[in-house]
Image (cartoon, rainbow, N blue to C red; front, top):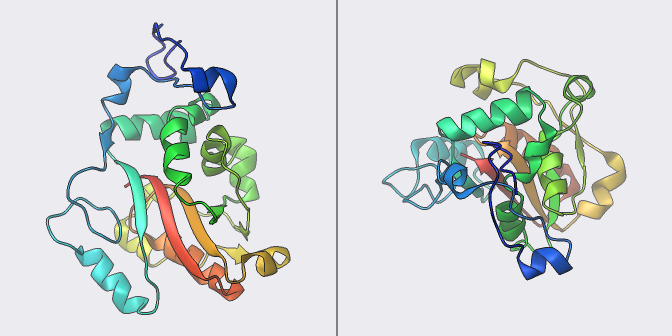
Length: 225
């Protein structure tokens, strides 16, 4: 096995379930994997932010804005230097092979959401043309997770990474719900999937867009927090 991050050759026995079934084999070495900070310490119960209190200040503000929304986000990793480098290579430099790096962990986690409809956060057609792929859909495809593309993003805007926290929070609604899937989502449990949770603004915009379909429950999942 050649690690997709450090490109070093690794010796690994293929697990029997990776051989007989269509499971995603591990494509990252133990050394590289150890550089990512798993969400295992004490975190906010709503957004997975590392903190020493049950509910962080950001989520307290969101609860005031969305009193009827039982918001909950799960993340696999904290955003550290290793994750920043991964995102630069995968998302901004377009190394599509890297969609497999976290495939096993994503697959294991999302299989816990049996019966939920997985909805990836969309990108605009303009961004798709430049990048060649939707980075969130790429992660799901690599993980063999079925999903429903229920939202569209008609207009492109500046990268979220180029905005301040205040600018992100003040951003207008970027998403539209696709009319043809409204009946499919009605009274169903919806799980939004995104790559990074920063302020939560994107995911709350997604909730605003999809609540028109009258879902039974909405939660969110991101690779990094």
